Length: 489
Image 1 (cartoon, rainbow, N blue to C red):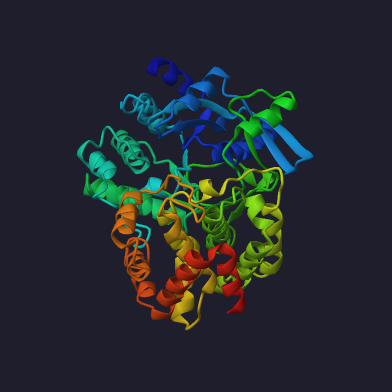
Image 2: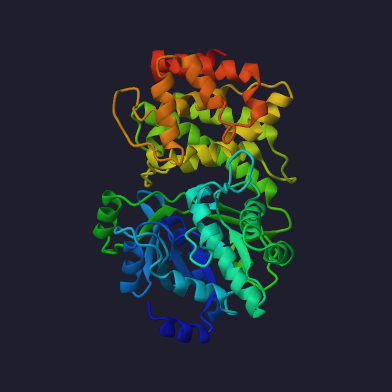
């Protein structure tokens, strides 16, 4: 990367936002809001530099070859769609590991961007595992090899927290005010958790720097919502039939929501005009979405995948599974929520089921099933612990946990093998090898993983027994038998 060219572009003032995580969701959500804002306002100060931190450099270069323009296809159903051309991304960079094992092709260019006074917001969609926090405790996993690498070589960071710490350290040393850090990932209190990861990593480097970050850097929380499946060959073929031959295109639903805590000391775009809800407290909306939408998605993912069901659309059209989702949302998730006046959770549940039934989206259950160890604490287990503490049972979650445990064996109930994509996949394989013939020991071993399952919930005998009973029924009688048994309870 030509740093001189990058520095010249910085002086133009076009890039005000750095985004870490150049994936489909970012391109179909935050970039769309920013494109609409820029088109309406004519404000050229909030262009985006998007960086890929993962192993694929292809998208980075493909967007560069397309002059950073791509199409977003928003489907209401198979017959109704809106095509948008997005051009708000001004630059793409690669800071991950390439196929040859080399790290950070554009890392220094990215750090230069992040250090520039023109950069006022750094946003992230790096998934839950990209923050390197323990799902149960929320503490930085300082023993993770990626984090230990950033501690040993802080000027050559490989993680999102490491990039943030190094860029903030450079700004601190240069006397440049810090940018605002905006997490757009599905985590409760995502701003606070991002702050935790960054401050704890900075403490490993310099106590003064860590204090400056803790005192001076804003980490607003946000809630994002839009269903954006991974692109398939069928998606590209559908678009080609419409005359769209764009290798960088994204397909998504028409619905989109963004709720953001209004805490941007360095300024921000006037997103309100584009429908972004700028609020004082994101937490109620965040928890509602995590437990009702994401929690339902996870139920569908593990139970459906075990039965050979491929997509959300197929799963929600399975009558008993659809009934399970509605029961979970209204009987186990909704009662744990404290929402502002005027929020109708029954109507919200109905709207989610309608969105899941969008026949234009081929949202694969295997995609949703990824990284369950990182997702399930906030989607299911925190709310379930609240219910258990109040003496209430959570039969739907117990069945979901049983399905997740069985799913991590890497083979569905029909005997089809698949890869388990999870940071703890190796541990799962060891547990199944050790306890595969003893369901009671297997369930107990999973519930004993205190970096995933809250210890108080694991100690709840009623919940543990419910998970074991559901596991036995699921493995013996299949999906239909497990759903029928749940219906009888």
